[in-house]
Length: 233
Ligand SMILES: Nc1ncnc2c1ncn2[C@@H]1O[C@H](COP(=O)(O)OP(=O)(O)OP(=O)(O)O)[C@@H](O)[C@H]1O
Ligand SMILES: [Mg+2]
Image (cartoon, rainbow, N blue to C red; front, side, top):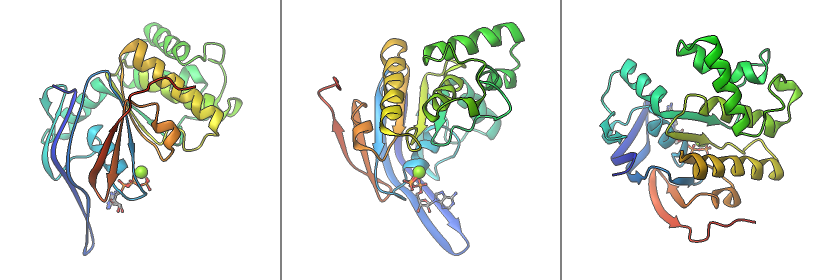
């Protein structure tokens, strides 16, 4: 059984008189420890799918099992708990607080969870070391490159030890060198630490870092490519 099990997932939006079916009928299982890339044209439903997987949004029909538990009908508070326990998010824009340094930014979710100072600092430092930023912990976002800022955002996402990282165009604001660097970080988290990774990307090269590429078109899965060769130069 997959850590993520989506069955007949549909997501409709109604804005005024206009109804949009962002997801039509998605069936998708993702195994624990997988690295999956989601690709598709703009407006095809990729972010909607990621938001449903991340329990930021609910499907209007279908069932969703996350780590064996049906979540599609849970009330908001319970859904937020599940999200905090299982999921770490990374976005195109890093969403770091400019007045806090790297170590403080990574500690934010731990503060929200009520963790005490000493443990919090230790976990944040470990997370920053895991993304190769052990020597930048006192830098503010403005003193870091774009790629380094994204690595801080990844450290923040892994500080809570999530089973799954969901990343919506994590390299969308980065040049190709920084992008490859972020993919190496994901690969290491995936291979060494067994974290399941689901990323949305527009970049075929970045998508190749996944073990499968799920291609979405008009709210449906058009095709899934399984990649044989995992060695990337
Ligand atoms: N909150 C919302 N309310 C109404 N319609 C929405 C909402 N979010 C998304 N949609 C619609 O659902 C469709 C899918 O949007 P989504 O953001 O998932 O696309 P996407 O594949 O991520 O596109 P992009 O590559 O541009 O980020 C679009 O037609 C969009 O207009
Ligand atoms: Mg999107």
